[in-house]
Image (cartoon, rainbow, N blue to C red; front, side, top):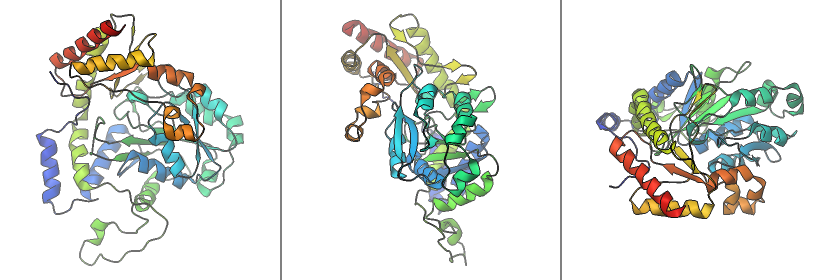
Length: 403
């Protein structure tokens, strides 16, 4: 039995929606992108949503909008995918990496220790879909002594008067932060990834959620950012294509990062049935939990805590007292059963590029400990109970061979 790691959910409804976009005569940014933005806005309860072509480009744009520059610092976890830090660098600032907690997510105390007068933003990451402790993070940035450290240097920073919290919610679309509150609406800005392996996909894509407080107007900001994502052109191509609508202007230094309708069509169908898809992901997660909870060597991934509930994006199993080498050997054994598993993530300080920048994994012991023992198991709606059981047996068999 072959079990792929994370195939996209493509049913006939998705195919029909994409065909509809193709046959409409308009395939780039247009009505389907707007419909997807509205669906994500409705689902998450966020104030405004702007869809773009990737999480990374969305994060770069938001950091540029915020006004980060050379000499500024943005706090990020060491335990995340490289895009979190690369976006900071592309925007001109320095990523300040901090360690994790035992739930994989960024340590709030490590954030506190890393804040300086150069800190302009914090990018926590919801690893595997489990939300960070945003109550603690938002309380931290609003503490009088922390606010006093903040040195605003742009109009937006002066309006806001504190460190910006930009949630890397790449994994957590569909997670609950508190009872009745979805991720996407709990921080200043949150960005979801809609990449091919995510719970909801547009093949490539991202969704920027805006929740800024006064004096910002999120609806006006949406229009500003929409224009910024189209090279600061005053009319999008859809509007220009209408009879007599050719004239436009370019009024700023923007980026070209818009999402296309043909991509949005994929995600539009998925988000409309997402509650059902989440139930199926939860089914797989619970089957794994029930199986592995019987073994004292298995550390189950975070599921629910203090009102927070995962989006069931990844099943990040950890093995007690294992070395990196033993973990890798288990993966090799599992692969012999034709089950594809993964590791999330190789901490950034272990990657060549970041080592060349001076980051050292020895400074992030919890991140390394999480990484060296972690195996991500397949979790997606299409998995049958028999297939899940086959994965479980492959893991148990591999453990017995390697332990």
